[in-house]
Image (cartoon, rainbow, N blue to C red; front, side, top):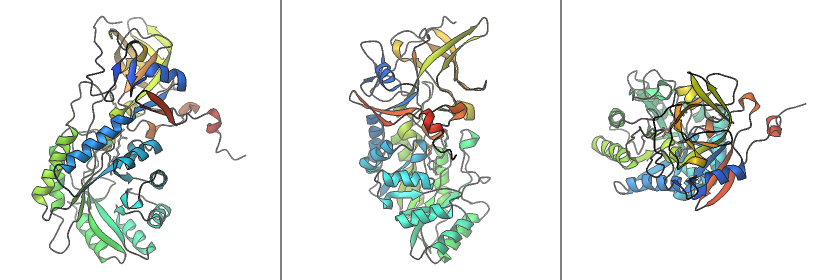
Length: 433
Ligand code: LLP
């Protein structure tokens, strides 16, 4: 136990959804809902989103564009949280959508996206996925390999708009697992090796593919802005006198605050840099597309757990075990990501207790937070990890036969389940006996 004290400042924190606060009962409140009540009503673990926070970030992206250009699209990179309720919310807000598989395409269509507004990505799209996309009238396919160019061309009997995914040879500072813009990448066509130019020639020589633009996504959870400019400059070199890049998709990647020590650029600054970069080097200026995932939904969601076990090892550390872990948030284990936590039922109290938050899975590496500062955590408390709205739900799994959590949307004091919790029956629902 430590004597260092930290005051919780949920209201001022960029890590929590906008509008979060400590209410009169001293409980954490999100989207106007008392998280302790939400946990009691819907159970734990639960992914809890403040709906309006997502809306506000979607508006921030749209506004940032509107004030600088009239030809743009903001795509929700739905791999961040492929939840029907979020697809719907983004469609209603006027966003388009990036899907990375037939499954995400299915969800986007079902949620009501106009196929024209759907962009299909993937470095290994199957024939079934490509056929599903073209049959559904998906507006744009981002072609990623020579094999795909051939496959897609030969299965079509009409014109299909495509963008070419380019790996511009840029490595921003982020975890190597989520750097995607380097020459040595499974994605897209490189610049340095001349493959991008060859891809352009092949698409242009195809029967049914109409080359309308280029795409580059250099990575994720990026705080720097310069690499985006370098990527845009690199892409500009691919346009020639004989073909016009009408659509330029500059990818996603804006980092978010996982802890109060993180200071990511604002959505406005991020958009500004990208648009200024495009205007400087592209003539004519193409339609600019951006593909945020994490920065739309990451800080909008938190995860609520219940503390079930406290283990104090004298002179070593105190472990708090919660009823989830690497099955609902793989990020600490995959990328060494750092999170904060708060005891939701003691949110107004001083965080003066040092403890390590562990999951309930059968691995010592199942640690959500090493050395968290918390307010006197005890068995039965509701522990919340903020900034879990992106790549938590989407990478969840059933390790150790653990059902995946419910997803709850909170707005103006109303909480509703938008994805029900899995049950033990779900674990055997696909069995064939
Ligand atoms: N566009 C493309 C083509 C992408 O591959 C991605 C993310 C995005 C857009 C959205 O990037 P964002 O704005 O979310 O950074 N599981 C990892 C993140 C993987 C990102 C994959 N691609 C994590 O939890 O950090």
